[in-house]
Length: 529
Image 1 (cartoon, rainbow, N blue to C red):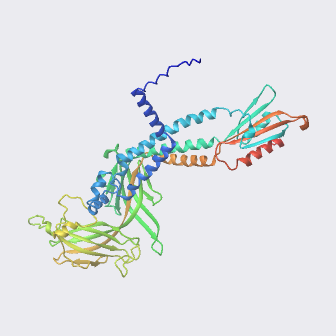
Image 2: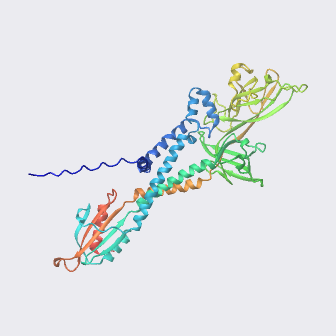
């Protein structure tokens, strides 16, 4: 009779406590976030998220284009506004991807740096017991030197070595090479962190603004927000933080090839910093004007038209207004508005119905068509249409200074008084309108479009980009590998020397390792240092 002893069933494991489950969830989430795969996905998402910033106009770059987009797409624009489409790089969803990528990189790079430093401090590992199982191996290598000679030969080839002698008289030489690959990886990731930090702090503490500056001593510009055509200050920058300087465009020269393609641009400005003396400075497209806490970039140019309007009471007003180019031959369009004209000196009352506006096109070189044939002023002329009535400047609605209010024209408050065909004027000619008032085309002045910017982290971003490039080259060009040599006393048939057994292991994909290993074995066999 067989007696079967019944064993008690093992007690069930107690269910994990809620705190333990939460800790496990946080730990796993952190591991996923700090993995290299997640960092690559976030980097890809950041690139995708930046695409709308190049498709839709950005308020920080050109607020006028955003206004025009609202007028052209009244149904779509409000939805884009809610989604941050006009402020992509400052939107919460873009910032969340940015911060997640930053966190992921830190969590990924710091442990790798710690492991890399530890591996650099450790000696190459002991040789495996079965070297013949390695991808590259060789046996029965006749060698007449000692372990220190072999280690010296490997160090000359930039291997880290470790000699280990055993009690039975045998010895091994362990060699390792290629840590620069991981060093390059860390350089690249730290450089990416530096660029992310630079972009973030540059957005917070930087500022930029654009200004069209017309040549002439009466067209100066000082660094105040009111004098910019459009400007953007960082969240940590106040208007009082702007540097104190003033600019005057003294001369602008442009040269062109026979085809009309630009050849060179050069601007000469008078600069006064911190209420100091005015100094003459020159700069070009690729060589910006560098001031204290500001860089002035030349990003465009054109012609400003000077017109003199004489009203029905004999009062004259002179205006110089930039016309914006619409093609590569500098066919330019713009408007000149005279709101404070035709005021009766006896009553001193202003009648908005008698305001004047002129809209037209300026051609530096008149050809047979309605466009310029060359960007230089070889045969300049201007074609204008005159409008009389309320210009809509007193309503308070923001609008473009380069076009008349089309709403005023549509309602009839602003009427065409010159006919359907624009009137042509050459320099020095005068146009007499239907009410006896006159408009004279005095001439033109060149203007330069300036982008004035300050980024306190520009040097950090540059250093990060250079280090990132160096790290990328090291990462792509480096190959980590290990080589071992084991020595045993030679048999009597082989003489009085030492027999070596060698093995090699590439830690990464390295097609040239077989040839390198063969060269090391041959150098050891020949005693070549």
